[in-house]
Image (cartoon, rainbow, N blue to C red; front, top):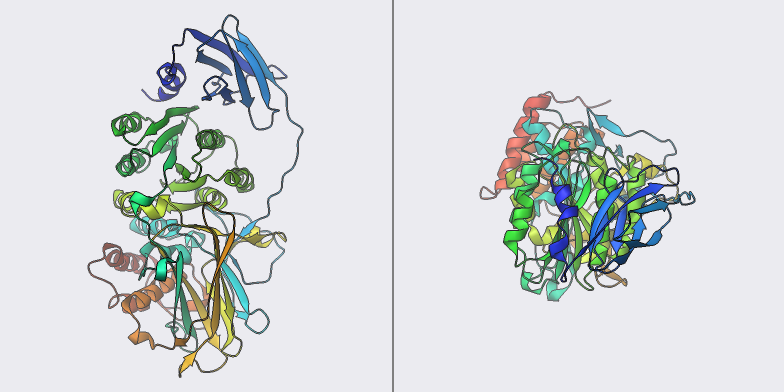
Length: 583
């Protein structure tokens, strides 16, 4: 019975009221021209509950009295507050709001290069879309000694790459984000000292793809938190149940994931479920984590069907999160979708503007992408980056367990907001440098008002940033200080800027003597660079990746062992021919 959830949502709300409901108020919402308006958000004054008008603009709401008050909201229309009665059919007209163009500055992943003025279009592969990226170039340390990068725990790119390679398909270059590939493995985590929120470590070694250069790793570790000490949570599951989700690797996969996530909930936590497909509705109002059977039954009953009104679904989820906001708690919307928002907002800029407004209310956003063929990476990434949140791609049940079970705390809790790392290179040791990964969208580079995007950091995580360095003098002898680090962030409950500064005294370590995790990280960087066809690794091959990775892989780590399989697949798909160096 596909699509029946929406009828149930609106007609069976009675038991949710703590009092008797002898009255039922009916009506319709229209615009000034008489056209019915669907998905109008309506809040009932007596209960505070939210409702939405149906496809024909109609609504039916149980109330404890003959009269009540509705507050109506819809994008593009003026807010309306109206008394409604049970003894008449209530016709409500919404007036269009004055059109105001809002412009939100583009957000950058790094600030290291000149801003090109030309505007390029979105890169598309079949029906899949990826934001066009510009790879970071070498920068003169004398002219521009400082660079800043955003920090987050996003790792969607790696599992998406795995999907392509497992299907014997080449990977779209703009689907490759090397910083997310490194994030995926949580390499070489170490607890920050003395209860600090963060710790910074650095490693300086030879660059395996260019023997004349050096490779610098900057590792940022976030503190762990005990689940028993995690603040009370209100999680809003925002689940896409449109027709495009009717595949085993989409809605069924997500249902399994959310059911697994429910096992972590404590009695003090609450869950709400919003669904969008043929229409939009609340499938489950805030329910205690102690009522797991009720939550699981709601998830089990979800069926796909209809179009994808993503805009309305997102707005309803945020409305519910705000209405039941826990002060000092973990308030989070978890959006699960293939990103095919074919009704409502279409352009990434519109998505970004809307989510930018919502993040100010202190509600976090976790995005879970699924599917293939019409997977809209660019849209989901825009939402996660703008919404004080993180982004993961679920390509299998194993990945679902990794993200929602093993990495539950890192995925759904926060130790820092607006986190970024500024690196200042000492021109006495560094002639040029380039940031590896953290590539910017073309659209962001063309925006003169673009600013650096700070990220959300989960607990117990290791974020690894890599830099290729052209030395100004030898860094192979003695102890050197080629860099200063400054980490900026905000505590989740406060709006005060915090800063951690460090000037590490580095001893150059020959590549062969590096810890296995650092050598493995170098292999991941080279792998991503080859997938992007980076000009900076033109003299290397897939065999070079394997040569570095094989002795460094931890045989007891499934993800690292699987990495070797993916490199072998890439070698087979792309061929073994080594590109000749340019003259």
